[in-house]
Image (cartoon, rainbow, N blue to C red; front, side):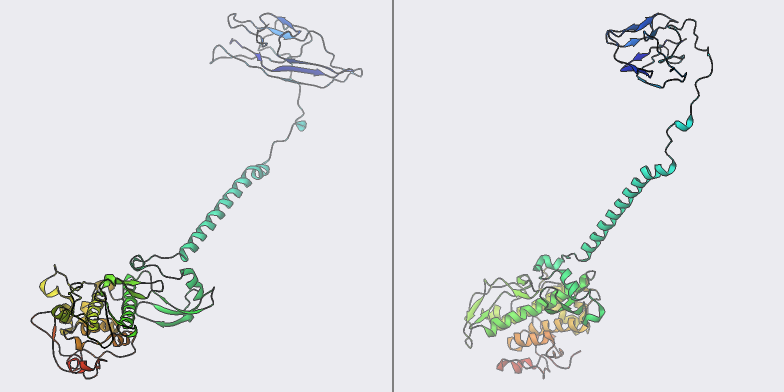
Length: 463
């Protein structure tokens, strides 16, 4: 038989209801008035120990010293309640026997009582008086409902976050490559989206080669605007768009410098790296460190030749005189550069491709000028616009200064206010950098009086 240790840890309370309430309470058994028998002892810590591990087959008992009457005068039993803490510790973990922690007996001591000896049926329990177990519905309400509510709330939060992320992405500012180079634009995409009613088709004013133009009303200022929308997926269209606005802006700037200011300003360093875009995407000339001024109607003085190879007009390198025509020549090189995506001079290119103006002219001479455009444009461009840029670039790059158009005429061509005469019989000279005179060009009239005779040899019927 296994040894048992019953430790009464906290207290043992037995209250019997008689004609006079009887109760007793032990907060530990130190100095408690109890009847102990056999090996039962009270330890120094106040615990009641009923067995002894060193003595086999022995156990002790502890009884309240006075008898208690459980019946009243009419013979019915009193009710009572008890609360206690105990522990059973077996010496052998694989075997154990029964033990009693609380007992009611007619006499003190349990002499002759054996674990397997029962003295009758136990007291029956009235199940109806027991507390009811929680049903499945209450479990659903107490466990399932909070879980479901938490899941629904989390799903709603994620849905709102996803919606806000989509809306933020929808109205997000797309920083294009050209913005990194030329500077940011003025309006937020969200404002333009609202102004054009979500870029609806009914607001379309027109369609270009690389975007549509929409009618819009700015939500804050109520100003009517025209918005050109370039597809973000169309990188080629964006490059062409930047080339267009840069060319128009630079042409307008050179008109002001050459004709509208109180003195003539010759920039002397017109090139792609000196062209910037302002907040409204207007092309602006920068770096006036090489600029020269002279009075209207006077001849420019001879100076040291400065500038960038490929943008220098032939007469500038010969005479050292910079004029409005030399700026026009550089502007022509700039037009060819933005249209072809190449620098005016490519030292490492094959001989026939090193000089951009010669290379473009050779393509035109074979009737395939569109083969000279920037390959990055793909097919996202307007044929007429590209041809205009390339042919105008060739015209501005003419070897004779008087054969070049002035900036005011160039702007009219770029804006479509005047038709550019088609290039006719041109030949590249042995030097490879200049054009020899041909025939034609009856419909081009340069504003400079001395230019018409030479210019007449440049343009006519065309290809």
